[in-house]
Amino acid sequence: MNYFDEEHIYKLKSLSPSYLEYSKLERLKYIYTYSKNKFEENLKRYKETKIKFILFGEAPPWTETGIPQYFYSSIKGNLHKTFWRTFFTSQVPSDMSFAYQELANRQFLLLDSIPYALKYSSKIRRTITYQNLIFEYLTTEITLLNKFLEFDSNLKIAFAFRINAEAIINAFSGEIAIGKDIVQLKDSYISADGTGFPKSDKLKLIFGVN
Image (tube, rainbow, N blue to C red; front, side, top):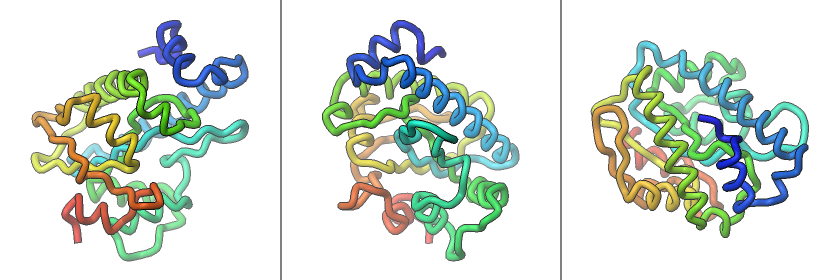
């Protein structure tokens, strides 16, 4: 899927015209490609593991320059601590490869829901275009994952962010096909608290882990 062809650039324009400046558009492409490669590298860790826990995020954050900030390219952010403490009582390991292998061993996968590292506003997140892009991207990504990975029969779903979660739920009319099952998408699966960010206590409750 080419997320930067004319059709998708037209959709990007409706979301945020400023990103259609040449330099920003090229940066968007770079962040997407970089993040996609890191995500696919991480998938190799699931060769012997069925995925049981999926957390839907949004997209890598926008950065003007430098190496993109992406979950699977470092192990030192607040989100890393939150997700690690969902499954472990120890501190996040400094060895990135070891940490991600341990998360894979616990059957956890973070999956982005949209390919563009925009500065999304609440207004943008509530548009039909945003929902349509989420539906297209997740449908494509999950179809690919189904070819290479196995999913646990008791698959658990959670959402990292509230408005993004509401968009996913609406886009898929409350259910999504993953693996061999139809999984329900519910507001109660949102792990963000009043700060707007996910919390490990909420994730433990949603995932049913101690």
